[in-house]
Image (cartoon, rainbow, N blue to C red; front, side, top):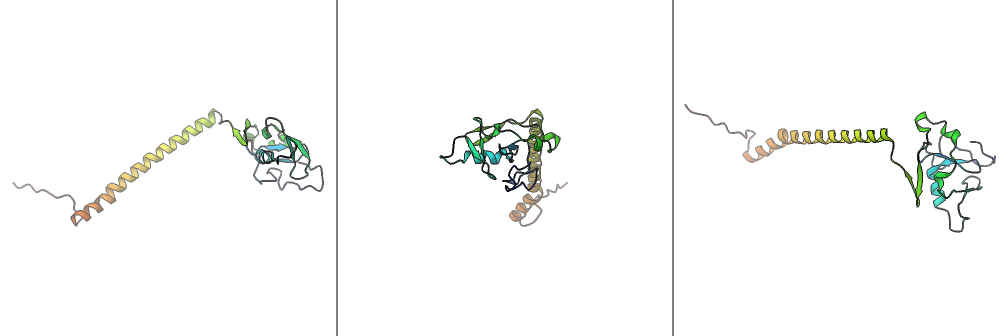
Amino acid sequence: PGSPNPTSPKPTSPVECSICFNTYDNTFKTPKLLQCSHVFCLECVARLSTGLPPNQPEDQLPCPFCRQLTSIPLEGAPALETSKELLATLPPELQQEKVLWMEGTKLCCRQGSDATEKLARCDMCDDWKRIVLLSALIIILFCIILWPVQCALKTGNLRCFTRTVAMS
């Protein structure tokens, strides 16, 4: 993004926030455009807007670079204009903006689509499989290693089973 003031710092990369240096995405790191044309991620803009001093004109955020004021909508920082130019540079799956809102000073995001929920269910299945595998390994460890050691300590040798010889 072009900087209207040649003396104001330019971002180090067009795909990362100039404040936190994180790469833009379509959720908390959505590129938000201030009225001065500087772009920062939503998370940084939200932090800046919630941390305004009490004597600051209400709903006016000074740009961290040039100090030009930007009006913050009633809905908070998520309602600021998104830089479509920067959003278009992201991979196709990240170009669709997610629904975000402010609850007090917290940024909130609705849980994902059905595909994400299915993915979460698969993750739960993977966790279930890991638990079963871990349980099986613990049982094997007990049966093969710990039980004979306990038996050897108790009887003084590794032959815990006594053979009964049937006399005929």
